[in-house]
Length: 85
Image 1 (cartoon, rainbow, N blue to C red):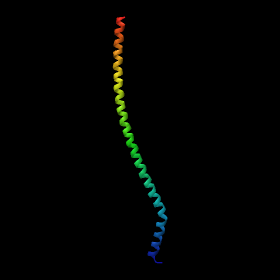
Image 2 (image 1 turned 135 degrees about the vertical axis):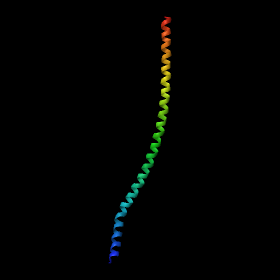
Image 3 (image 1 turned 90 degrees about the vertical axis):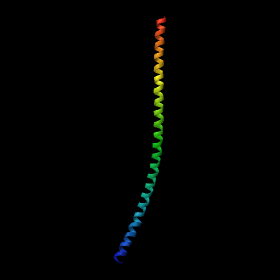
Image 4 (image 1 turned 180 degrees about the vertical axis):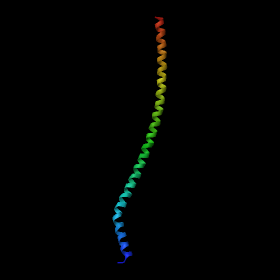
């Protein structure tokens, strides 16, 4: 066997040994891609939820303002009632 044939034989042996590792790495890459897609979808849902929460917070602030206004009116009415008595 000459040097070139020996190198080819060694190269083939290395390829055979590395093939399972290469296959596993491809599988892992595929799984990581799927996980990345799922994480992107989750991030989109979280962004949507954040938008909804911000809108709800705005509504709650407006409700709180209305309640404060009503409380002020009730206090004025109570003062008037006290003067009437």
